[in-house]
Image 1 (tube, rainbow, N blue to C red):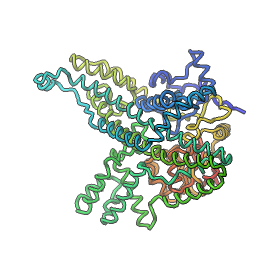
Image 2: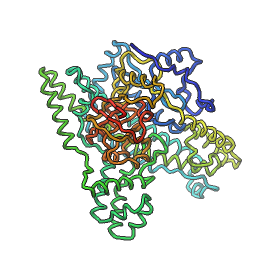
Image 3: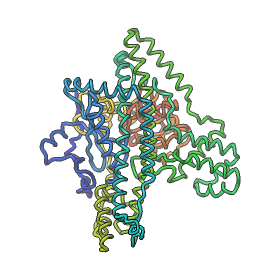
Image 4: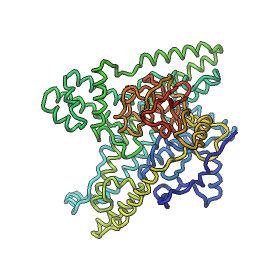
Length: 610
């Protein structure tokens, strides 16, 4: 029986945030003045995309949501023609993104889309390695263009070379063009992001579907274990930190590296000795590109990279030094994971009696293994390396706007939509060209102050995990494996929503992300800054995790997250480290308190507060 969550049109505006909708693209609004659209919105199931957005979106940061709204949908609908699903629709409530996959509901249309999908996706699957290598070159080229992009301040008087060489262009025009180029590179990057990603998930989902047909009771987690133990470059930044920890011990500079939590202080001390200089040179070599890893998901401007704040990787290096010196291993248990993978695969394979089914099993498994690395590797190129450089280029635009009085602080630029920044730059440039006072300084600082207050109220609001009528059956593959939204998880969320008091909840469920059962002290960490407080053997409870959290996985006994399915980052990494995980709980960070003893069953998805 289907259930219904809140009606999106009945969620009230937070007092003091009236008119917040102007901060975001108009098509993101739930509307009441268009009967046809209102009916569609009320009949559609929407869920909060906390996997990507654990906090409200700043107006400018919405660029990546717009980018994947377009890119994912176009590849599904218009390029590869995925038979069962079109794109993913987006809306926003109080600064939080809600999404809804758009299924192909007519069986005849599904059938009609199959030939195009088989031909087009088949081409990519058959030439995957060659095409992925081409993709890597495209991405590196795009990043190189971004790094080379010059954003120059406006001069009092143009250099005489403009006249001598008859350039016919001004620095004002170049500033406008640089901003356009910057935004274009961002959108292009996300075009590439989804070129392979949907096919990567589709291969996994197809293999899972085949396994579930052969073995109706097989847990999704067993299927994921059959494609685990594969090395990906997304682990390389963390490997660089481990190598630097080993090198500090080898060069006997441990005390120098551990001298302070401030990298600047550590650097000043190490520069006084030859071994210290050698260690610093090794760190400098590792920085490009591996320290372009974000301290968060990379989706927010404030997710600075290690290169922006070297105190962060320093803290992780110290953790690894201490573990090595205590005689503990800091390596991922790759051999054990691969051994368990091969054992599970052989076990299920032996149960298949039909030759045709066995052939399909082998072929689909091999395809899933071939495409799996991309699912993690693209993150480094896009969300980490590209985004880290991109945010800082936008800050260069912010420096110019601040110099001309359009914003009070460089970080204020994030409170403006990208289109508003373009309008402001036109105001700025034409005023500069005309030698008159621009209007922007009287408009934007006041508007930004108001938006800061709105954003603060958004942060204090708890977005419901889902809204609208729950579907009878949730089958859309990405919704299940990436976001962890299933009929069962909706039941779990509804049960928690119905509880009078979060403190009264002692048992709840999520997705079984990585097998095993442990009991230990919980540590609630909402950001990468919090993982410094993690103690050995604790259970990490977080909204979601990102690659920057890697050092935490060598300390914890288990991991619990609010969002995510069996293919989310936390589940993948926990399987690689052999750490139990329960993901997609909906409310773990609101239910569990730091210091409580919790029992985590990563095989069943059950969590108990002891």
